[in-house]
Length: 447
Image 1 (cartoon, rainbow, N blue to C red):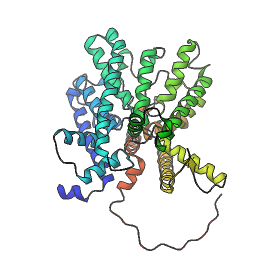
Image 2: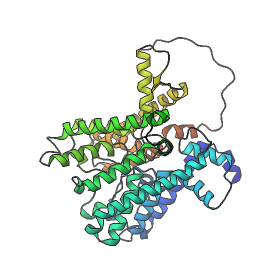
Image 3: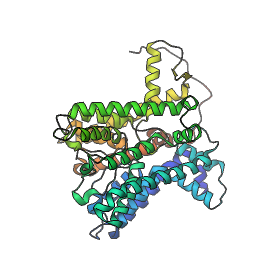
Image 4: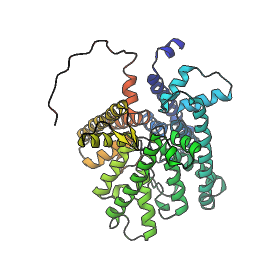
């Protein structure tokens, strides 16, 4: 076992680690004690749910409250927490508590797991992640209990507060509102400012990334002292939230938003803009959205959150790097500059690979699903695929209707979305070294 461990690359360790967690979760969810009716759950349904929870996606084939018992819900919540923070982060923190020595290899795997820029101070960052996560999740749970305890009773209200706080912070999108109707999510709270504000705040905080937390904790609100990464993440996040909310309001004011008060329309617009970037909750009927709103949602799902966070997607930094690269080439500038800093060529190459990989996987997946089940509209299949690879969890309602092979495709996409499509691709590479000889260059025509 030790020999096998040493033979694995850092990316392979991450991939196999998540695979084991998903498999363990699937086995536990299969047990009769995990279902509300005390019956065995099929491996296919358990595997899909376990993958969706560990990959903090939120796509479901059975209603979380109506199908799973309290034990099953606890298993799902544990998978969400592990998937949100990363199993290596939890493992390192446990090693710290047990006063175990943390070797260089383990530090390297942790660095790869949370996409850290440097290995120095990685253990200290892991401590901050654990403490910060605990603070926000406990605070969110206590606030949500104010609404849930009077509505559902003490013990159930406490559990609902904890579950939805963790699910929101980890951008998972799982909910327990099936007690009021299957797959309702948070639609009954579309005008509730307390629930909306709390859930949206948890989603944003969880989605901006652990490195941004660290920078904010050190430099507070001194914008000039922030790292370039922090400036890109914050500015892009604000821009995407505002743009998405305005577009959703304009496109849906005569559709799903018609007939409700203006204040509730604004809450719904902002909630939809924020949740589309990998959270998965919804306060409006996703299946009833106009084609325009559905397209905007798909774009936001594809972009996702920020690196080193609980969110998925190609990430905000990838988007900015590519846009800056295009702008620089159109202007024929010598370098790619943003916020008075020049971007590294390696970051541009990596951003291009991430974009192309996610696009390639999405195109193949949509083509397969449409070929297997042409009964689905193209926009529905594309929405489902982008929701899976972006680890969002929003759905137009076709998740439960796709065939088993299409579910396996969605499982694969959720898995790649959580660990990163680039990480998965690199895990297949193994220990390889670049050849010392370079081939001759020849020009080709582009454009």
